[in-house]
Length: 248
Image (cartoon, rainbow, N blue to C red; front, side, top):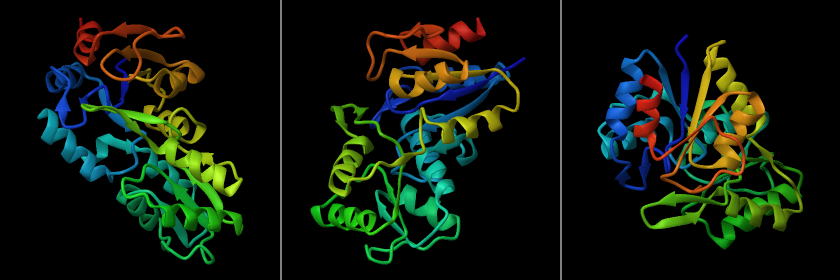
């Protein structure tokens, strides 16, 4: 039976604006072999359409929005009351408004706070989010990755923003993205009984998700992790080697 290939992006398919060598050819090789590729990213900044466009622009692989799942999308599914104070980017805004909830910058009226990576983070926006939570708003986080890999090295991720917000508010967030239960449930539904491979560069998110679910896992060495502490099914130099191993 062919597999659902759950493929991370940052550190696996590209590093910032630089493609991982052979990424596009490798992805096509997997699809030509009958597998389904699902790009699954904890980076919540972009909506799926923009993520697909970046994959195409950076690697040359013609990704579609239907092939993309972001932690912002999963976080949006967890919202059950608005208005929503967004400490993050357009990916969260699109996910929240797409479910019919209004966003607000008023910490008094906010009933939910969704926190993700915020490239425009300010003291005032952090203060507003923490005030909303202290006033009783539910706190949802897209993910808790402290960093993410780029061509410039590791940069602060959503987990760094979340750490500040949890410290300031005294609350602990419900986390949507990898390796947590909401993201795993979405992938189980997408797999629909098929075998699952998780391809990633982080053992504490990508591979941990596979370990918990009993899915197969491939650690690539082009991103954050250089030496596994767990027991991935495969350790490969890059996604090119993974595609060759799976289709060979």
